[in-house]
Length: 192
Image 1: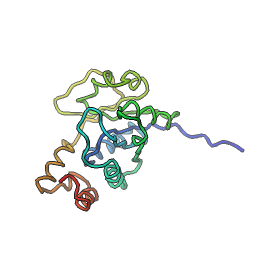
Image 2: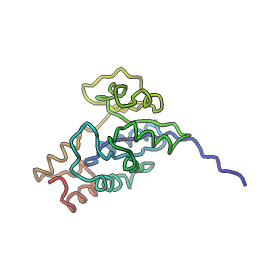
Image 3: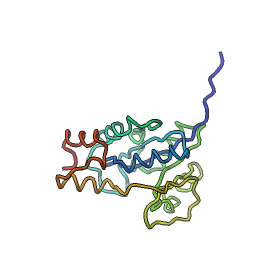
Image 4: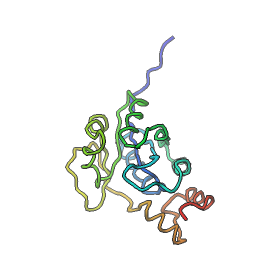
């Protein structure tokens, strides 16, 4: 009985609270795929960023919204692996689990230019830089010194904070978020 040989893939992880996911996130993933920087993008919602206030919308809701948003995107997937990471939910803990899950693949992190130079100061930052290649997303006015393996120059200037503000003000959020995400937020009366 012959064992099937799995082809090595270039897999990028996009970590974040996705509170909520928006078209800027989708554009980053699509750019990484379209520019042939990677073969797959995996969205990894965080349970709770240890450096931010507690997220008001549950991990489950945020995972559902990510799945709805990426359903139509080829080669994009959701990982709810952060549910298994111990507290505090450091990125390094999540990335260790992901490295165990994809031991044979080339692993990348999609990260903003505004924080790429800070990775070395993160919990186990040196380990992250040794085990994950970096794809940096342009952020207007931010320059970085860290060596990277890919660069996404065109981005959409949208933030989850802006989306939450618009919802609170009773304003339109589509097309800043996919229509299915807008409908989900309305259905469950989130961010009010």
